Amino acid sequence: MKIVISDDAMKWFHEEMEAEQGDYIKFFARYGGSSPLHDGFSLGITKENPDEIAVETEMEGIHFYVENRDFWFFDDHDLHVDIDQQLNELIYTYEKA
Image (tube, rainbow, N blue to C red; front, side, top):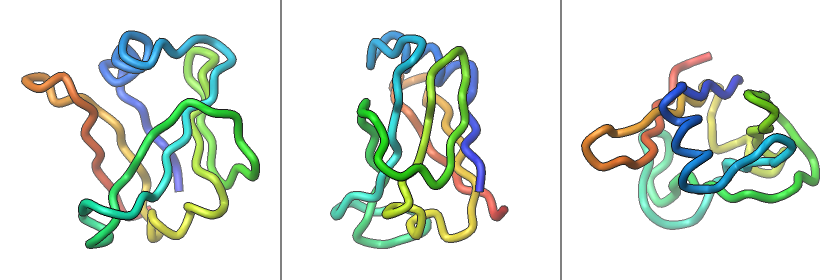
């Protein structure tokens, strides 16, 4: 599994989450909502330091990661993070690894 962040999504993280070099952004499974991979679960994000990183990618000094406890959610898929230009919101796509 890998995490792929688009340039537009990087800009969003800087502007909306005030992400700076050295920060850690976590993607995690949350109960509720829906995703293409799991009904009843959706993807959440938060800025916090990691406990046990399963997957990590770094861009512009910002670390994007998934914890071991949330690794199941991705079901052997890569996570691609981009922006819905009309809504200025993150969009996630999952591609089989």
